[in-house]
Image 1 (cartoon, rainbow, N blue to C red):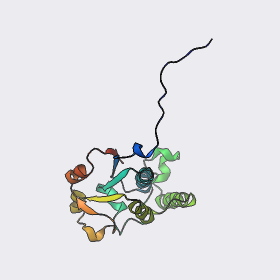
Image 2: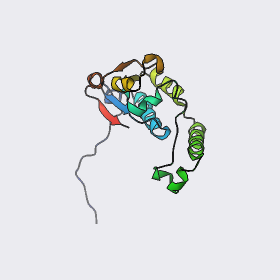
Image 3: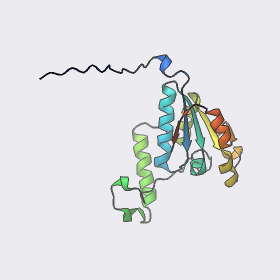
Image 4: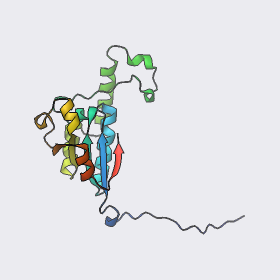
Length: 171
């Protein structure tokens, strides 16, 4: 038995016009190791496709851009069922340090840069880094406390204005 489908095929166009005028806004609200990297990987991929990319760091996501903490992000197994390990292990002394060390090793082994280097790469590719005004005020931080390539501390309303029409991803 043969069938014919008259539905036209949809073929994506990956030419330069496909990314013209596109914007991506990534809101980084988590500062733990396993939540920081997805935002940076998505930003890097978007920039590689020519998409204007903005990252907005808020609440615990501030750890990703705070000079005193950005090199010390942690990964905890506690409450993370995706580790496929008994949850009781996560509460044992030293487990967060061990899990963090293992994740950093795995990230390094596949050639993914550490946090400051990855942020530098994103900025060098044309990405924009913004810090949340309310979070900065709550944490008593100013621009001198932040990664040097953060463009400014801005309000949420300012970020919405800067990223008008953007696809928004909240992590």
